[in-house]
Every structure is written in structure tokens, then in C-alpha cells.
Image (cartoon, rainbow, N blue to C red; front, side, top):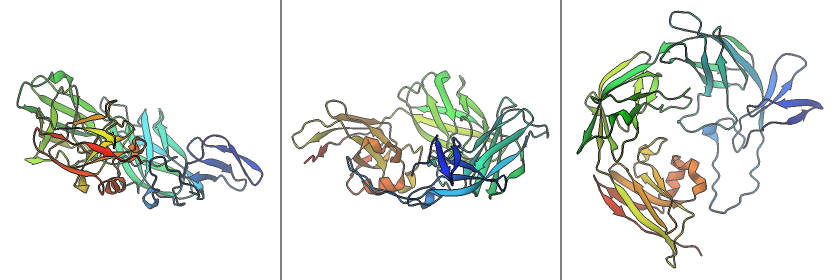
Length: 376
């Protein structure tokens, strides 16, 4: 269900202007309330978690996918954002995210409930449909951003007294270790902590690694986060993230405001796992219009930002190559490139494993697998 875009519609003979956030606004003469089309998902539900998937094959056309949009009364959410010393914040952003979006990366069509923190600390978000939300704020008054998070229940009445107090983000500090050879230029290595939850606000902070291998990552908002690396690693791959003698490389760390996590050890390896192969038809003619998808056999790792999910497109000779997967057991399948947005979706991956090949990667393994596609 695609939310309406710009344009006009008619409600009982009166014009209604699109609100630019995926809904139409209808002024009501009896009061100041407004109506708008809420984000709606097939077969006509207001929550993405209640939506019903539609299966489409390569080149398949599905008709009669019909459902009604939900027309609801909306509200305005406004309030004041203050710094820890109670002074008003002078700049930043606020946003509202539906509480029932369970996983990062699962956005809702038509939702863009956001606003700006004005010079006097005030903010306002209009045309919010009823529901349970998480209100987030990011203040930019200080060198490192400050944050606030608050659950909020919205009905058809305006909410004009929301008070948010910003707090400093968490700090993650530690060292990097490169096993098995000379490290890359440390000045080109970055450490970040992307959110493992939906609704993160603003860019992810990142830290530069110093010459002695130490890093300090400031301004990380409270919540669940992965610890990840970036920059120019030149053949090095993330192997482990050790916190309190435990490897959390594939487990998000929960942070609170102003928390300090020290002595983190991030390990890299230059032992590269690699999957090579070809994609051809029955006559051994190269096929290039498929994507090769590798994903773990463990469903617990089927999630956004998973290190165990990678893809590759065959070249003109039908050859493909996937590098840098961690050791483990994997499924290998060919999928339609148009399904790119579903590669981290558990339901999609569950469908693929029925016909997928299964492989095991050790430390530094090079594995070959060829696909023969039946085109008749």
C-alpha cells in the first residue's frame, strides 16, 4: 500500500491539500482537529507487524491487491527540549517512531514524523496519527551531541506540554588489534556504533584510531548498538569485539546515557574467507541477471547489519565472488536483484533456504560453488 503523495483530493466537496508526509489533511469546520490518511499496509492494517506479505516471482505480475487506506484524526505534538543544566536547547532534531516497529531497517511507508528544535528549545510535529510512539531528540548545542528518549501515546487530541531533558551520550573506548601481520594505516581506520534499533536520529558518531591503536568513541545515544569498523582496512576483517572477556561481535551492547565502556578490544584478521563460482544455464551460457546471496544457517543472525549476509553479482562471464564472510555454516542461493530490500528479512530468507546450497567456511577457506539455472 503506497501512501498518497502530493496533490489534492476531495472530501465531501471540500478540497484537501496533501501534507507532504504521505497523508491528506482535511480541515474540519467544527474544531481544530485534522484528518489524514495514516500509513496503511496490506490487507488494510495500520501496523507493519500485522502486514501480510505478497509473494512475487521473477517477472510475475500479481493483480487485485486491493485494500482501503485508514482515515484518522491526527494530532500535533509539541514541547520543550532542555539541556542537562535546564537551559533550552538551541538546535537539533526530534522524531517520532512507531513503537511496534520491531527491527531496525523495517521502515514504514509514508512516515516522516520529525521536527526541528528551534532557538528557544521548542519543537512541534504536526499530523501524527493515533498510536504508541517513541519520541527521540538530538541536541547539537555541544561538541558531542546529547540525546533524549521518551515513550509517547498519541490520541486525536493535541499534546503541547512534552518536556525532554537531554543527556550526554555514552562513551566507548579501547584498542584495536591486528592478528597475523602488519596493520593498515591506523589513521584510516574508523570505529562506529550503529543502532540495533529502529528510529535512530542523526548520523552515527565514529572515532578515529590513534597511532598507538587506541580509540575513544563519544556521543553514542542510549540503546542497543553494534560495535563496527570502517575506513580503509585493506584486506583486514573484523573478527571479534571483546567486552568484559566476552565476544559481542554479533551481539548488540546496551548503553545508557553518560555510560563509559572502557577496555574494549577489537580484533581483526587477515585470513579472508572466499566463495567463488559461476552462474550458467543448461547450455553453460553465463547468466548475469541474478544475484548470488549468502546467508547463515542460524536464523538468529537474519537481521539488518548482519556480517553473515552478503551478495555478489555475476560478471559478463557468469563468475561471482563473495569475500569476507566470518567462519560458519551458510546457505547459498540465486535471487532476483529486485528483491534487494528483502535480503535481511527472515520471511524472505526462510523461503530461500528450501532450494539453497549449503556450505561451511572455516578460517581462511576458499570454496567454489557453481549454479546451473533452468531457464525453460
